[in-house]
Image (cartoon, rainbow, N blue to C red; front, side):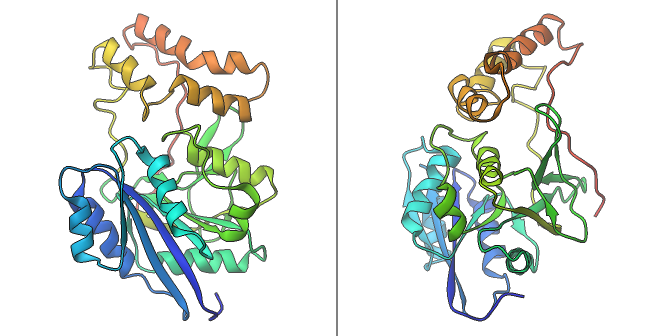
Length: 296
């Protein structure tokens, strides 16, 4: 269990044009049980929403700090705006605004962190799709460069190789050792990069027991994986700032973490995309993260 000394937890969020989803997330957050002496500080970056998200948050949650982005921050830029505004804090909680925390989620993260015996331990919460009962995000297990899977939560904490950034509790001691998010990325690689950097520095990354939140799997429709889209649209989506493989960001990730020859690993997804397209999608060559099933 966590101790009763006074400390603060800065909750870092970024949002764009999904007002009701963001409000649902915050309602579940503010209903979380906290240890004695703990205080939540919510810092949210509204990245240029046109649906009134920022004003709605200010109205319903006047204690939250709402920062204004320009529409080009994406997850990394928005999270970093919130992180910089929130310093210092004892803990920083990354929380995607499409996640609805389950009861006891925050206590579970804090208890796993405290029981780890290392003040720098990062704890991760798994999420599941409430309709399909399918694990969506959480800890990542890497058995090879292309053999990466989302971990199924169990009844005990598990050591992770890396993370998804949907529910992640980061102690100040971890940030002091490895820093914050790498601004070489805008969206896709930043959380995985952070988890790998933590492990390289000897910082434990633990997946908490059970599913701590609910969110829905990202749809394939209108993504680079949607075979119904024209090839040019799929290509643009893959290379875009929130895409599967923006070239400069993919190179930054490959350069930092891939084995040699790095250029081959960088080039591979583009070649495979082209070969898949040439077969009309009948042959699927790209490897994607597998998602284990769990009926809840």
